[in-house]
Image 1: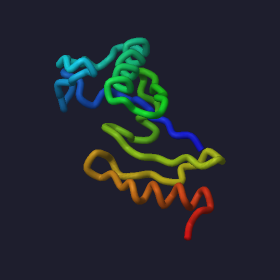
Image 2: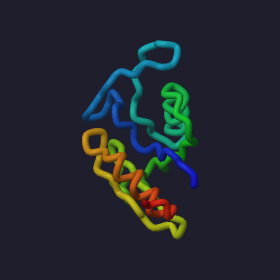
Image 3: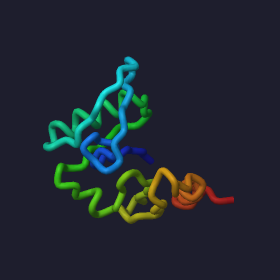
Image 4: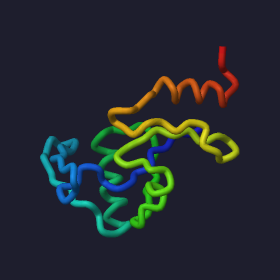
Length: 115
């Protein structure tokens, strides 16, 4: 089993509907604009992973937002994809409707670890 973050459109870009300042690892406050190409998006995703100290690799959605459009993940969402490539868990939109317990139960079910 592997865990990944899929970095989609920046949720808190200064030129978005939900702007927010970001503090990087050095404690510097920075403004992040919504990337306009895949190179910029990859740089922002890399900075996000590094600044947050995320323990898993990130995949980056293309600038046409194909993954986000398919999974409706904005601003963030939890999914479990089983070994056959099917969605085994689709959580509510975060951050307010995350249900980590539901994800954990789905992981246990897919792995055959239910009590």
